Image (cartoon, rainbow, N blue to C red; front, side, top):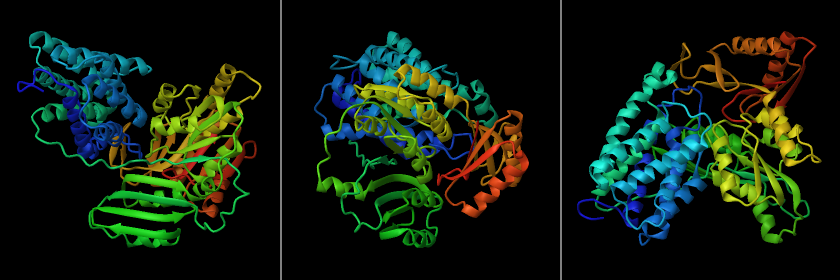
Length: 544
């Protein structure tokens, strides 16, 4: 970079991205706090941080000696692989467009940067169905428009970037007036805040001396597969899943002895370190979902890794036999051992662990797709914040990937029931999508924060009832919320109700809940009860 910051080169671009990753990591909780929906969620700041950190990690690994177009391309590819949640996918699309705008460029001045930003915004808008105002897209578009105007005035990279940030700040402040939900909460858009932070990091990096960044590996997903290892002796492995995680404590210096006692009862080989601010855990267990769910009571995940030791052991004993290519394969996102079991019974080939609070990366889904010997792979994201990441998988594989836009696990179950092995891929896509859309999904969870949402005053810890992702009611009386869900089932004349109870809910308590629904709905509606073991949601209830 020249002293006047007229242009940037590949080494400069690397520095800007690494700094942006650090800024997002340092400020992710501030961005997370802008999420106005009171349920526990994947968190915008965390998803953006993990996405950009994936690029910074790759740039650090490759070193600084690369031309600008290669640095931009490396960044875009890494973010595509690491994109998590809608916010992570959108920021990856912005940088993918920027990379296209910098093809064959050894340097970028103000005009080149403005053109690249415009290309990035176009890429992001083209990938989003029905883009709304008052979002990260709005802020990014205003930034790109300001860049073109500034570059016409002064073809200096730093000058253009300064003007971009000024325009972005105004656009971000305006989001509170463009989105009714943000206006009621009195906050700006979280994704837009993250994008502006990235741009500010880039500006600050222009004059920074020495960038030090320690990237923390983040892999909060588990991929499970259906396989028969019965011929191999793994009986010596009492607890099958090596589970490691780090949580940043909700309250520094708070007592974590109860967590240690819980973990001691869940497995063996426990190593737990509490330094006051974070808790590091290594444990072998047969119930990683339960362990991870319990950890959420003490803090927020920094890293998570779960490995199936029985599978690893078997793979060391024998090479997997050649597998014949089949016509169709299935990948599903799921969380909870009971939910996983149902998907396995329905014919899912690979389960990627994740969902609310733990959005898998595009790369996690792509790895699962690549591991299935099938020509066409159907992906069931089962969460609205994972659909965009699933749609990016097609960019990473030569297989025919079809995303069924399921927004809940019960919709995923119904989609699988709509599959016909004799039908074409197009016919199955239509029938599976239709089956999923016929399902109403109701969920009982808890308020993660104080909020006023849809004219409801919500206190942290209140029960929340959701209907198809929308907040239906809140309160401290669980039966009152059940009654509202029951009323909805009756009004829509549903015939089949399935109740999946989550971790922490006893079988006896779940059976009482099922009896309550039966008593209110009457004998004309079939009600089934299943152990889902899902985290976050006490109950997931589907009605068809």
